[in-house]
Length: 211
Image (tube, rainbow, N blue to C red):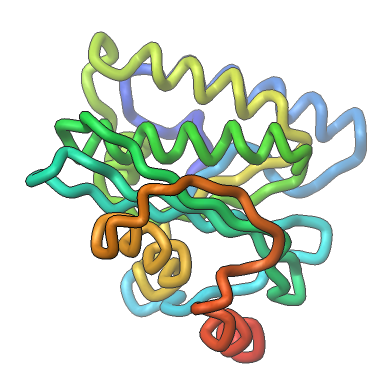
């Protein structure tokens, strides 16, 4: 597990400060769960969706970008420790001209939704490699520094938060929803309780198989 203090991108002081402030909060409240962390998944490890701990919810984020149409299908789905879907959402972004921009718009949208819906103890999982590289390897601060600062500020509003890159198999429901936006031209955005009916059986299967 890598804390943001160890992330090598140019805005390291942003996440270092976030880790410091989070650590102080946890000490004051006797909380041992680490906040604001990324967790790269080693090859051969986790390959299917895993339930979150009992005191957290998990938000899986999907992002599907079409270079041909410059459109992005974005989604998030929130599940509890029993695998029950609390709510989900999809959205279509337009005039998006790079995969990096698509991933950043989607991630920021999902984080804002978690805050708007008052989820305070959240694990955010995604499978986008560009976003993984942004958080773990870094890009020029002049290009992405303002966005990193904005995400940093948002994360300070959570009680406990953790972000993880996971393989596609661990994120298949969110990706199926985001893919459908591009594949089926589903342009209507919405937020809904529970999960999409057309993925009901797969959601139940993941919940029953998850440890």
